[in-house]
Length: 343
Image (cartoon, rainbow, N blue to C red; front, side, top):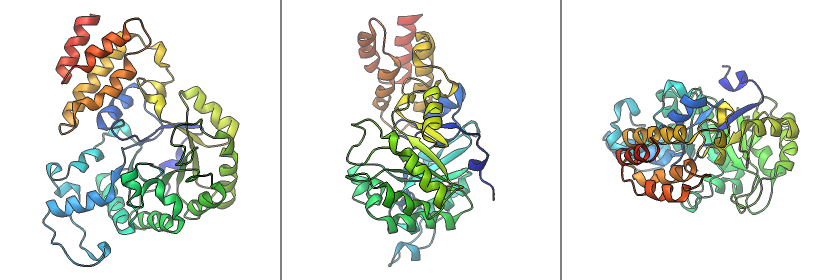
């Protein structure tokens, strides 16, 4: 089956999945203002999906390995209230192509998540092998998979065998040190449809400039081992023009924009944040706040503070106005403050 990946016009720009940032409310706003070539969900625990869906549907506990346990019904039979993780997998048609991102170190759990993604109508599955969160690494997942290439391959193949969806991977260039020549071939051996590489090691987090100079080596390995795999670079790109420049200079097929989306849902339309009038920014912020409340009722409204900080900056009085907005406890209060100050 031909996947959407092979149909993308190169070079392309995609939106990075970020926990408590690229939730359904934010993705809906971006899709409205200028949709990226591909959209990801926030990462979701495959283990959590299986265990909570199992509990909510009354599937009995059994002894033995997870692979021996019965697979519970999918989301269409599972109340969202019974498994809050299902909210992270909400999406709209405007976001397509939309990829569900999961993390786990257990092939049976990955297989379950891939089947679930297909049942829900996603266009693809992505496996997070780059997150440096210690709680996730303790599970052997996220960036910890860099240390266990064989286990990483098993997880990828479980996803590939479980559904007809294209399977991609997001990772880093190494653990404590760059290990491209060992780690990247292990991933490419599984022939993922796309490989996104955050061009820093796990140890570096996001504290140093991204190592774009290593991208040609990654592309060369792709050309040799998995020519059909799309290679996407990630790190420090702030605009659509910069994404195109990186592709031209370093040879990757596309670029993933992460922190460049903050305060700028127009980035994939090619607009810079500083080119957007403040009233338009505030209107977008208010729209985001109301959508957040509607789509994420169980989440703390304070999560939006990172967006307030990003939208309200770069003008005289910005700090004072931000402080006032930060005190809002709900979307209505936020809207009232914006109307009173800038109408």
